[in-house]
Image 1 (cartoon, rainbow, N blue to C red):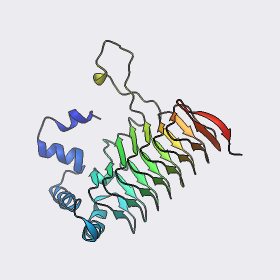
Image 2: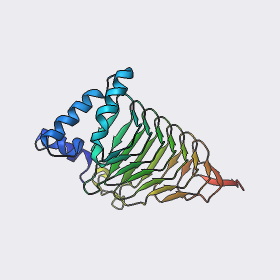
Image 3: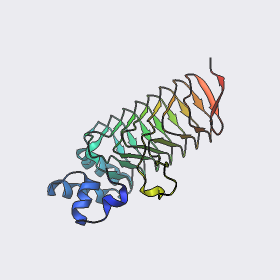
Length: 242
């Protein structure tokens, strides 16, 4: 997959828009996407109702009772599957871009995405289980076939950063970093019932075990066993919950 700048520059602007943003080539798909995009900023109950009526058709699947707040940004929604009673709050970004995957983002039933949450795929995959709560301004990103898998009943605090892949290859110190290839650092897995405090960063290749708690501000670069409490930079286990 091309890097973002290369994907959106050069060539026909309309064709680029359809490929990168809409994700489907047909004129009817483009017109319907534009109609739905026009509904994004409509405020209040009218906006909620119109988006509830028209937006589900954009997605690979969209369950009953899904709520879309105002100013939600969608990219390639045809690769996104939403379960039942999912809440997508104001200002969220759901970016399902992929060259290969039929479904790059899957959100389970009763999940809650608070204001300004970003789910971003660049040839990766993100899966949120049932009853997952993601608090405001959190970024979850999966790139280069490094998946992010968040188990059911997890709580993600405000302004967290969860990154599967995305590190540059730094083997050549004389080369421009932005021109280096992206490494496959490994994905991120949060098992069931994990709680991340605010501003936690979880980097590629990490698994946080079931029932664990990571304290606010921690940077997790190594896996955390189940039922543990971890904190610090880099995060270290300070005690067991058992």
